[in-house]
Length: 413
Image (cartoon, rainbow, N blue to C red; front, side):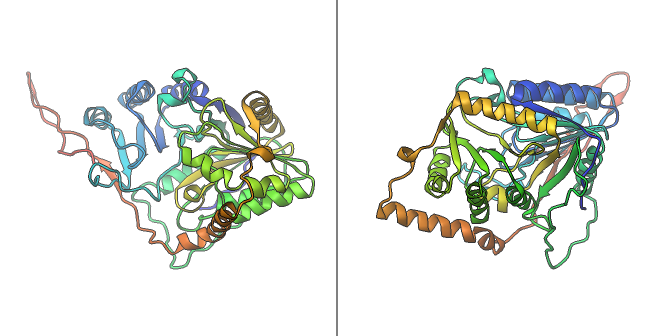
């Protein structure tokens, strides 16, 4: 499958769970025939229970629902929680579930990291927000800053077709070679245009990264990238520095209050190279940053699930929406500039690691790793992941006027 730029879309930026969850739940309540939901994380907390209740209502009124969760990201949903949905007819699958080893999850790599909802053929949601209370602003200091988009229009059909072609039972041609697709050209730039792009381990291994590279090469005035887990390949670092050196104002927003300390350690190894090249780096200090967004000049933007790190760029299944629209671009720009002004600290020379032999050695190792990581990953075995469906539970026998028997046995993988 290959998607093209689609015109005539209505695209809305949704910031954090405060805006995202009400929009998704309301759209599910309006669903008439089909809901497809993919997510990396679904927790059994207040947010997760609200999603459960909303899907259950839809299933009970006859809407066909398919849910795909990552086996690593969502390992702890209770049997009762899942069985209530499957008993109502929800098709519930785990991507690549693995048994725990000494209590630890083992399927660390090649995750299903997409966050997509498609409802009927009319509305879709794409972004980086999972289903957990930590995406709500009232969660406290650990509440995540994140983004998604709600889209209506022709691009929804592309997203739906992508989902249908990736459901089990769809026969897709597999080639012994892996052809790489070029970034789709927007030959007639206009307004309200959108392109759905994804990363897989077949023919679309670097599509999202290529769109970032093309964006940086085409930038004339300004680029703002806000990315939670920033440790990209050498090509992207080089493109950012080149853009800054030719006069483009390149701003990078990274985590300053990370949910995982190693995130900051990795990003700071790159500060010297980027700052010396003219890139403005800002550490977001209000709370953990979880967003994966970027904009260029006054028209190009992207919102999605893909971080700019080795996992997202070389291993995980990811999805982004590329948008060409001045109004949407300005909305995201205003949001990010407000964050920069109010909640960020700009990285200066005092925050750049000192130039010692030890730091020089670390930098050399890091850059060689980044430069060759995609090629190294290509040699790793790309196993065919399992999609494990949770069967509907056996219904208890009930002694009434009629004897009710139902179901076939099954258990959560």
